[in-house]
Amino acid sequence: MELDLVEISPNAEPPVCRIVDYQKFVYAQKKKQKELKAKAVKIVVKEIRFGPNTDEHDYNFKLKHAEKFLQEGAKVKAYVFFKGRSILYNEQGEILLLRFANALEDYGKVEQLPKLEGKRMTIFISPKKKK
Image (tube, rainbow, N blue to C red; front, side, top):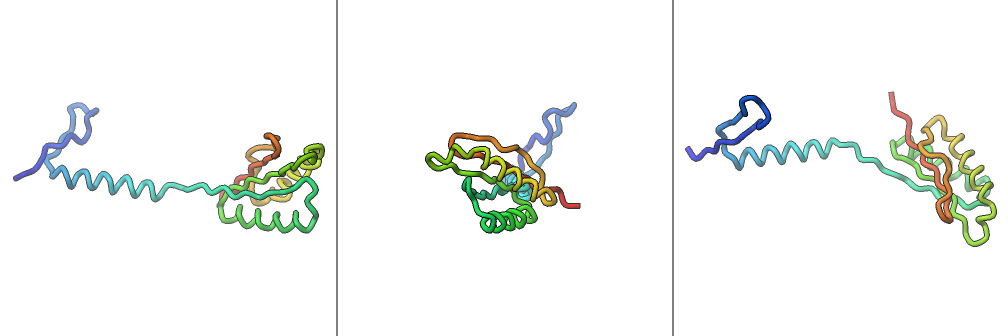
């Protein structure tokens, strides 16, 4: 009949085997794996860049983009990039990021508070779960 003996569950007592066409069995397994992979949630991270002396209009413009990103279900990584001697204003950058996180409180929650890494200070905001 050109069928194969395939071990389905080796850990069961006694082990479970089935007489099937092995090629069809392997194909079905791959198809199941592909479906599971397609159903997995893909996390998108959107970045928003500020300067330490970002003006009010630019701030509001970027805030609206961040709201849209969070409503779409993407995480937001906002950072202040310090060029040259502007690293002296790191308190100003931290205040800017905290104000940004506070404004986005309705749309997402802060995953990581502002942290200075080299010349950039970053904050992560993840979207709130939809009900």
